[in-house]
Length: 453
Ligand code: TRP
Image (cartoon, rainbow, N blue to C red; front, side):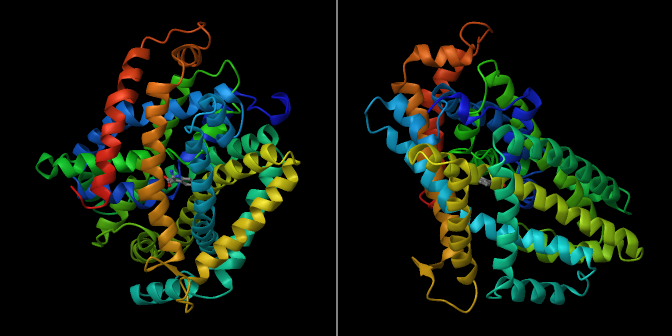
């Protein structure tokens, strides 16, 4: 297959916005602020930024080198560099991981879309119990969440079939700026509430007494998850980078945007929640149960503002989820397209249908059908746990070893320096990190997640 008919991102800003769109997801909104609040505010943010700079960037660069060198889907990209050795299976693991995420991430993204609709029609009202019941009955409904999942899949599908430049890049150039505008509008509304400074203080006041060894592991785990490492997304998108895209600069910009969105989300959530005296939590219950209650109490006295705030917030979540969802869809689409030699449209159709079926099973597993379980968890929780705690560390660990110890150094220095046209003074630091530091730390996170340490 010719390289040129795979498609390339057309502009530098397109590269950054599309890839940052893949990284910026629900984790930035529903996990980062909470973990920060729990782990010493600004002290945690500092440690997090250090983890991103020292470790996250190194692993991102590994994936980008593999993707751009091969100009092929993730499985083939690893296979090309593996020269017939079993390293190629890491690439297949990446594709498998993304295919497993597709189902459950689609379900959650569908929920966000449903909440956009409910906020538009003014249905998000009530007491804390009402919000909880509404959410529980919605997610365990046998049909409704599946319809929203299908709607979301339809949107992602329409973007994917238009191709890399005309579809993914163009959509990202519209959606990402909109995401930032919404974030800023929401942050301003939140900061104007009485006592908003309590939230800002909670988020930014460094409390070093809360920093323990565990804090570092939390920061590292969150950095890897937030940057979408080891899911095939970065590798697939990097395969659409042109020869003059600067890998290190792009990785820095993408990681910077991802961190910025996470911090701004904290500035939306904490000031509003603490201004009405509600303790924020994390995960789906934060965004679908706690926050509707916060918005109702904080902005309820001016219904128009409450309406605008909740609509903007769910639209923001849907955009964050959709851009990540597209990146995960594209991993499987490019894999099928290149391995089965079929048209992009047909590959995307297969992936979309598969995603709806898997998502429907995940969604049903949260309802009455308790036969849909694996290892004692419902399908939804199982895929979430298995991909984040098992596939991600294993993929990242072997990717580092692959680049650090196996791949020809000439290929790495060529990719980092754009074939000698730009300086890459950090090459030695990078090599040291991926050979020794990253694998050891990833192994430690892995043990930590399983409670071994
Ligand atoms: N980075 C995403 C977030 O912050 C989470 C994520 C990791 C993800 N890997 C992914 C999302 C793959 C979609 C696809 O929420």
